[in-house]
Every structure is written in structure tokens, then in C-alpha cells.
Length: 283
Ligand SMILES: NC(=O)c1ccc[n+]([C@@H]2O[C@H](COP(=O)([O-])OP(=O)(O)OC[C@H]3O[C@@H](n4cnc5c(N)ncnc54)[C@H](OP(=O)(O)O)[C@@H]3O)[C@@H](O)[C@H]2O)c1
Image (cartoon, rainbow, N blue to C red; front, side):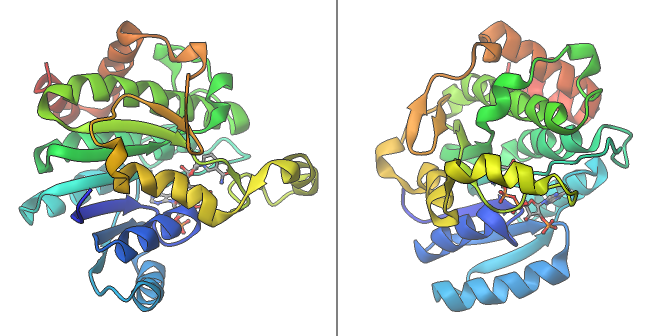
């Protein structure tokens, strides 16, 4: 894909930083959408030095806060720029059950509700051949949920539910955006030792021992994501789930079009009138 403009959420460290670097090296303008602008500006300076590209910007975005998502989307749309790629990368796990400023369970709020609202609100900036890339996990197969209690879980279960919701909504948005020529794909980047699975407790050592045989490096995990933006061979590929570099069949929990539509509609109800209107614009 020829270089354009990409938003990468959580681009200050971990896989998001790696993706931002790859895109900048490939000549893309990168908007780093980060919740801590001061830290992100330091990361930006490093990425400018490493990539040789000055076209890396920082905008503030806290995905756990729907108000922050709305403010970010409004600020970006006000710039009138076309969005060629949206990489919904940022994500968390949490050992404790915590609530977002909007009263939702924090992991589902950060990993699913915020990014879903972001994608819906940024629809006006996406055009033919724009690509949306959503970060899921192979743990989505543990994420059975009920529509009326999406955010009632904790820790691993909450993470799995959030990643199943990301996957199902990704497939559903892909179908809804097909006529516009916007592609939407989901990727599990591999098990990457970025620290996201650690809890700050004694049993981190056990988690590390269990995951160690599975680890792939940050560059490898980052490539699994960035190629979904960069690879010309993937032009027109949409509604796919990738694990690393390989296209895979998702867990049976992903269901079909009816489940996808039901999830998007229930989510829009949770998110509010702007999300409901954005979703209706796709019907
Ligand atoms: N690593 C793995 O093994 C693995 C496997 C499967 C899927 N994934 C997915 O890959 C994505 C990246 O994970 P990672 O391994 O790179 O994790 P990471 O190193 O912990 O990085 C997470 C990123 O998300 C950002 N973030 C967290 N909460 C945010 C919020 N409320 N608003 C905006 N940004 C926020 C963080 O920003 P701060 O610097 O401000 O905290 C950080 O930049 C996640 O979606 C994760 O679920 C990772």
C-alpha cells in the first residue's frame, strides 16, 4: 500500500511503538494516539531518530474514557485529513476488577468499548482502500459472554471477553464496510514478552515460566500487525483473522453475521447516540 496516514493507538511502547516505527520507516505519516502525551513525545523523538522521518505526531487519547475517545475523534476529524489506516493496538490486562470513568469494567472498556467507539466515530475519515487493524488474542476462545453483561468479568476472563468482542466486531464491521472498500482485519500478534500479561504479583514468575516457550520477539509481533497495513498482497483482504502471519479460522465462539450484528448493536446502545447513528449510517 502506498504511504498514507495512520493512527496507531498505544504507540508509545510495546507492539504499538514497533508498528509506529515500521510505518514511519515505510514513509507513512503516523499519529501516535497515547494516553500520556509527555511520555509519548519522548517516544516520538526516539522514533523520529530511528526512522529518519519527522512525520510522527502525538495526539492524546485515553481509550478507557469515552469522553477522551470523543474528544480525540472530533479533533482528528476537524483536521479534515483522510485516514488510510487505523491500528487499534492499545490494550491492558488487570488482575483486579476496576471500573472505567464511565463505570464499565476497565479491561473491556479499554480493549473493546473505547476502540469500537473510536472506529465508529472515525468512519467519515476512512475511504476506499483504508485499512482498519484490530488487536485481538488467541485467548478469545475463552471469552464466552452474554450481551446483557459484557463487562461483568475480571482478569483473564475479562481480557478474553474483550478480545472475543474485538474479533467479532471486527468481522461484523468488515461486512458492513465492504461496500465502501474499507478493509477490517483482526490479528493475534503472537505471545510477546512486553509485560502485558504480568500482574506485579509473586505469580508473575509462574506466568512467565508458562509463556516462555511461546514467546516471539517484539519485531516479529510488530510485523504481524504492520504488514496488515503495508502488504500490497493484502489489498482487498477483509474480515480475516490472522495469528502471527497466518490466516486462521477463529474460535467457534466468533459465530456468524447475526452474532456480529447483535454485538455491534448492543455495543452501540452502551456507547450512546453517536455510536448508534454511526452504525445506522452503515445499514
Ligand atoms: N504481548 C502479547 O503477548 C499480546 C498477545 C496478544 C495480543 N496482544 C495485544 O497487543 C496489543 C499491544 O499489547 P503489548 O503487548 O504491546 O502491551 P504493552 O506493552 O503493555 O502496551 C500496551 C499499550 O497500550 C497503551 N494503553 C493502555 N491503556 C491505554 C488507554 N486507556 N488509552 C490509551 N492507550 C492505552 C499503553 O500505554 P501506556 O504506556 O500509557 O501504558 C501501551 O502503549 C494489546 O491490544 C494486546 O492485548 C498482545
